[in-house]
Image (tube, rainbow, N blue to C red; front, side, top):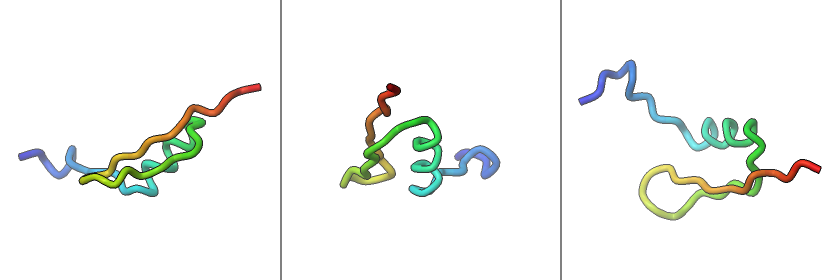
Length: 45
């Protein structure tokens, strides 16, 4: 068992915010168990 100090899973909004900050767009949650998100890296023009 992990210590509560290290076992702090992210919420969907926290993960989405982190991905958006990393220039990931079109973020979608997959319909399987757990928090699984996918997206595309934004093109820099």
